[in-house]
Length: 226
Image (cartoon, rainbow, N blue to C red; front, side, top):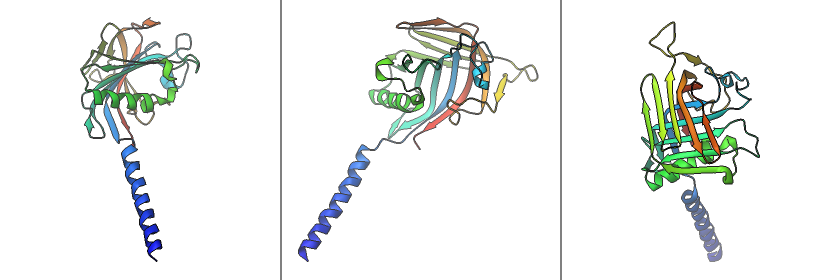
């Protein structure tokens, strides 16, 4: 009888240990929401947003700016943080690449949290191997007003998007409503404010471009671990 009670106690302790260790090693809950804007390869009105081919050599390269207005990773706040992801959405699996810029002023725990969220979740669809992922912690500056969205990263990126005024109501930007675009379909707002890049210059390693006058848009986003 004593043996049975002893074995039961050991079994209960083992189950409790598994529960505690699972809680310790479980990924923290996280959430990020805020404003997104991007510039891309296409002419203004980007056909990719309608499920059509890009306008230039069937190539879609983007600079995507995620400015987090509200966010957390476990017990750590991510409010006010910005992450910029730059990639070629149309690159072949053996040639794809991505560059992440994270503000160097972020605390170490915030840098680690943001890298986990964006590399392993937000951009996980791209399936870029580690050796072709560049992560840099550099000065990142973002400005946002009703009609202008701008991001600068050291000497590597200048993105300046001016939203297009609608003719029917000049007080509102030209919009795509109920978009047809598979990437971040649920995480982005269904309405996109369309614009044109006054400046879209980028240089990192062997990647370099100048897409002034090309397409851009702005919207809001919400990504969560739940």
